[in-house]
Image 1 (cartoon, rainbow, N blue to C red):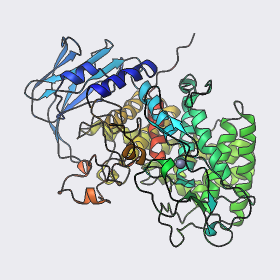
Image 2: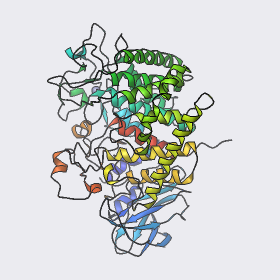
Image 3: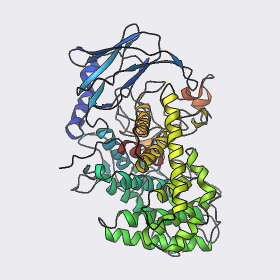
Image 4: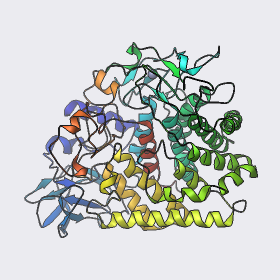
Length: 580
Ligand SMILES: [Zn+2]
């Protein structure tokens, strides 16, 4: 970090307003013993920093002239069982003057800078969408002019079919998003990613519609989110065979080394289940769900896409009815991500509710009503693997459906469960020293996405029954991911003055840029230590089982499905456009 990056950050500010103050970075020696949201706080929101070394008072100072703008007394110390930290609160909610500031604690040090602004997380949202764009496959991408040098040529344009796919003469697809740190494309993760983006649109269209960052520099005029979701959706549609079934993934046999995508030497193939019918039930049901959802969301803005998506969804549903239990496993010689799932009933439940919403066909409604009660427990905790367990998406979708076509009993039961879960999550966050709903058991592979999922669940509960406590607790999870955590580290690349720098992400490792590709959420602490970097750590609490190391694929990888939840969590915090 330093001058070079600061110059670059100021360049960003021209396009993506709200960059943190570089003057503060140059002059500071910030301490990780003060944890706060390094992006900032809305003018009217609660503002809390957390101090992990004993002290008694704090001062908030203005970046630039170090003027004192607020002084306060630290709260009593509480012990965080998840991290082992002793935590004291510095509450500066009274500060409502927009600007750039830092927290100064005598005997401890100063914090990284933050802003107070009307829409402090707008830039983080825009960069989260840029993160998706940077993961596009089958096309050249270039993040200039805001991020000159962050580019790759068109990649993975040619593909064949693996013998396991049983394909005839149809052309192989290309496109989609690179799934994560690798260059594979997988139906399950793409499906939940597109769905999560479209769900954000369902709830926050009024805030998202004006955000029309032109991802390709090719014209713009479309809400960024709809444009980007379309990219993933289009690849999903292309993965459907003529009989309606959907192939599971499109990858090389092995993971490539840390090379840029256009220099990946490994052949890419569509991979199936090795025997008739070659496609798999979970992937096909997921396309049925997402295709129907897209038919609804794109009905007015892209009617041709909506019509094609609905046709694909119907054909996918019919295929799954005939093939309900065909499961994917990697064929011999293929070791890229398996994303295995031997229960596609939740994907079918999800497809049923989305097809019903898109078509009003009561057959789909009946299918949902006959089965939903056995899935209600899915609302009580975020799934550890949200690409595998999608019942939450099905139930949320039903809860968001407008009466009167709904079944009153089902609606009452589902909404009550969504609200009870949201209130429980918010209560847990309020009682937690780091103000998060996370439990010790949540520090799994991708724990940062679990944090984002808590935010989603509370934002949906708030949408059904508005409550300031739900919105505030959802925002607390954004604060956690942007630095108010035991590492005082922003888990999002190039967002915040002290962000991770070494994600498990091939372009970031292979290119010549000193900083990683921007806007990407890393997986986060993983108490199961499923990589050699984490396994080598000394014993430590769950929340501290993390290293900013490129080799830590189980703690520091990026992934589209995590990124989509991050987009949702941020979308819920964007300021609403002013009504005339
Ligand atoms: Zn590619």
